[in-house]
Amino acid sequence: MDNRIVLDRQAARETIKAGDSAEKLVPASPCPHWIVWPAYYQTKIRGALPEVWVRQSVYDRLLQVADILAPDYKLVLLDGWRPQEVQESLFFSIKQVLEKENPYLSNDEVEELTQNYASKATADRHQPSPHLTGGSVDVTLADAHGRFLDMGGDFDDPHEKSWSDYPIGGIAATNRKILYTAMIKAGFTNLPSEWWHFDYGNWLWAWYKKEEKALYGPATL
Image (cartoon, rainbow, N blue to C red):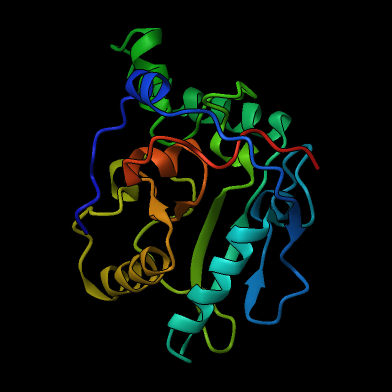
């Protein structure tokens, strides 16, 4: 998986035009072709939603992913559009973990490290929090009976093993490759520091696709 391209946020701001699509957010749970397990709602994060919402074109591409996967695998949707309140909570909780583990780093250095695993909460039209656009999805795999598969690391784990190309080995490496390959074939890009995070249409997608313009800016529910 050759996707560890350094994310230069300033370069992205200067070169990628803001998205302005009015495409609607749609709920994912009515679809029988995947499992919806809204992770933050399940773990009782304040402000988290009991539904996974995504842009219509993201939904359509997820249908492609479900079709690409072999019958032994089921796509699991963990999160999509995310309120700013939830994004802010996630950023600071991960930052606290990394501050404790890296007491020698400055605040700016800790914030930069944190942004590998959680973006700052912002509705800035040029570079909004990716999940606020409705173009980001957090996904994993389950077997045909709905049992979550070993992916070699937990969802939202802010450590090196969460990088998509981390050498975990074994069945977990196979599962990651299956998920990654299906999502990329359907037109998504992967955030290299999170094996579970994929984008379509937002500025992160535009950066990794080398597009001049994002499709989506901030969305409201």
